[in-house]
Image (cartoon, rainbow, N blue to C red; front, side, top):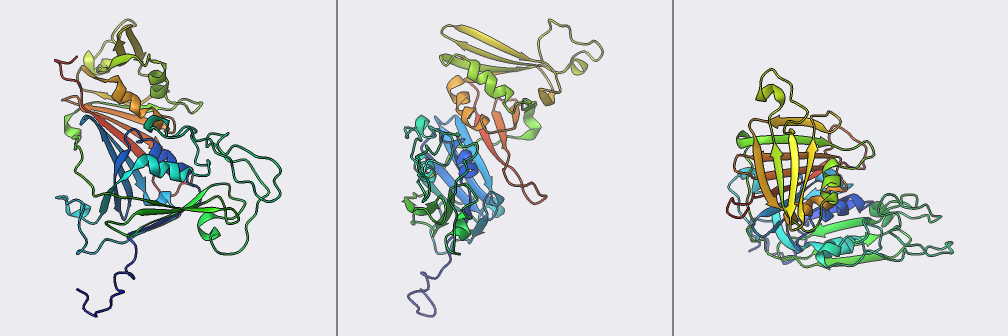
Length: 377
């Protein structure tokens, strides 16, 4: 009950979340990285978003989207009287709001003008191909497909904006990106998006139904049990060594095995590794039509970090590991860790397009996957 008897008190409560960004492409790319299951659990805190999806009680995908991804980010904890979606044992995690949302719907809304990049973003989840006609501004004579550049930069136009209204959130006409303002009033309310290409073009308001968050798979990774740690650099052309390896494998493969061996100094203490010796890192794929092996040397151009305490070999469903390809397309660095029970952790650094400062941190996406049981291998 309200102590002052004002029926409008709840109406004046600030929304749990207000966030805006002048260009949705980076935010959309982070969401696409875990868009292999439609229903996602979103947890909002003062420091940003955590988006979690799981598949077959075996694979867990998590996108960590920090507050500085947005141009404006304001979080207000829900009233204690509001129902809590989840309760965690750690006190620092109690101040959050969690809900479930159809992730593919959110991504399609961000791409409603076809300018959020990555053509065919929803294909894996049953979405559309991402081909849309770009809004034609006054003074433009031709139509353009909004995603011809696949999100790598928008083409210039003569459109300019005026006034001091919606452009506060969506930038002026010289900034070529689709802007978004996101609000969330709290438990039971929809996630509301206001989307526009610029202040002169059309705006779209999307309300996405939210659901009570259900407990999801927990796969804690303990560093003291780690037996293999590898950090793979990106190629000079920006591509990923791991992405290239996975892309070259036959999609009919059933099983993917990561094999690690200690460096020569650890293995023998004095003798260098022979040319025909077992490589430090081997990726082995097996399927109905045969097997493929890819070896990686201890090359600073490939491996930034390599730590292996003992010979390691664990296998995973190729279908689960291939879920990481979308995140790999945008990452610049890959961390691969395996613990003594075969729990695999893959972390992908997703560089922010914003200027780097001491206060900013790049978002990242993490996948954790259980190894196959010996009986199933």
